[in-house]
Image (tube, rainbow, N blue to C red; front, side):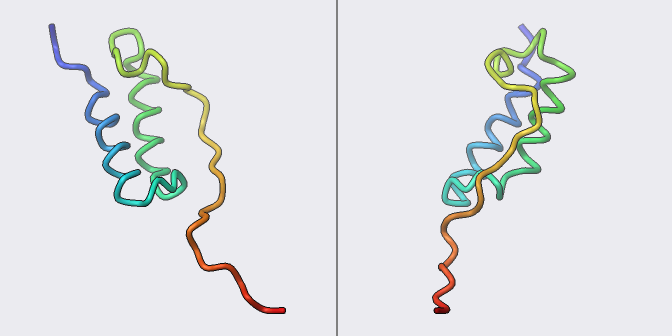
Length: 70
């Protein structure tokens, strides 16, 4: 059985999320690369079986200091 063509992107997503304190917006390019791979290979890629192919919308980054101006 050939290797899953999109598995490398799934692994990159995990690495990016860990490196960026799970702030998804910081991994936007990696999520998009996974989406593009799944658009092309969904019929043969196991990792794409549950992946939503709609473009992702991200919550704002939450680990930035809050503005303390009054």
